[in-house]
Length: 211
Figure 1 (cartoon, rainbow, N blue to C red):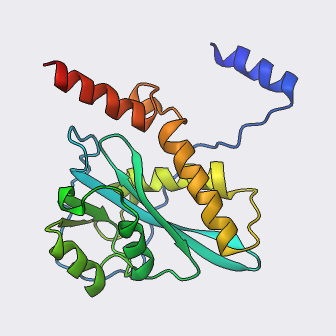
Figure 2 (cartoon, rainbow, N blue to C red):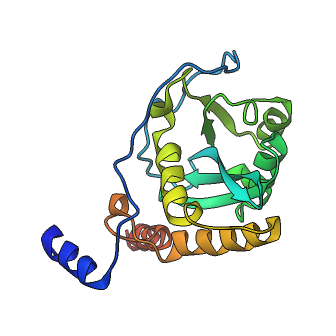
């Protein structure tokens, strides 16, 4: 369908898009001085499931306080494989996201994030070492190095956070559970040829079996 026809139908139905053009504004911030480099090097298109997982955090209002959401995204099919939410922006929040992953963590090969202290610390380093997961960190003040995670959270803010009112952590947890299920199994992605993450994975698994 043409953009003009879609616009006409939306106008007739009283619908307004929540989307805006994605913008990244690099700026100097206080970051850790870890010697770990950008191993991923912006190779955001991966051909193997669970080869590279990226992550980031965003905030959401619960009552009159800020709470935080962490998600783990598989670059292979943009699937949210792990997630957590809580009142504190800490390594424990990231650790709970890993704990929610339904796959064996030994299958993960590389974990890429920015240099926030909630990602680069002793707790997370020990967890990655235990499962032999290699580390990759964005360069200082360079959000483009983690562009997929940045774009993912813009999508989450647009589709899930903006306009939503959560009265409790439990309500946020239930809402996030529903959103992740919708994102992985119902929402189509242009980057996946207009398939859902689960459809994309099934399609390519079937193609490999047919070879």
